[in-house]
Length: 139
Picture 1 (cartoon, helix red, strand yellow):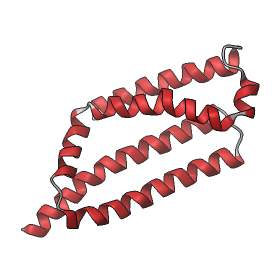
Picture 2 (cartoon, one colour; picture 1 turned 180 degrees about the vertical axis):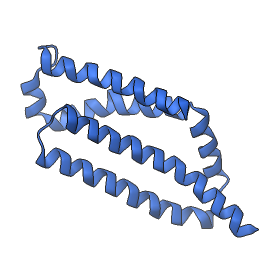
Picture 3 (cartoon, one colour; picture 1 turned 30 degrees about the vertical axis):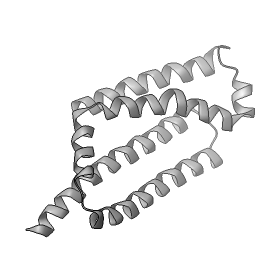
Picture 4 (tube, rainbow, N blue to C red; picture 1 turned 90 degrees about the vertical axis):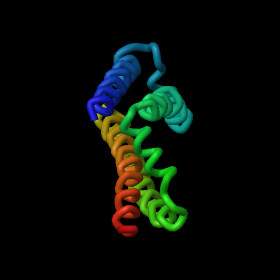
């Protein structure tokens, strides 16, 4: 858990530096970001979200959850897939509402990041819960 908190803190620090550059300097053209928001989101995902996921995969917490997922039976995986579809549909829906109805600001981006980090955490936590349910069903 300490590693997960450290990763989130590291990520938020880098994120705040990026958005400070965007809003306070001409290093990143704010007008371009607002006009080409779909491209800017892809850049944000590539330079911030993907590295976060890659760092998170290296943690012991995530490695244990992935081993839980790999050891699940096929009959246990389908309810898990439906659960994960619901979780990510909810997270992406909330993010869409944020970006559609609120202006792009530090707070909007922090909330969107919190949604994706929460979705990722719930995804890996659900692997462990599914494994525990499978073990309890066998007993």
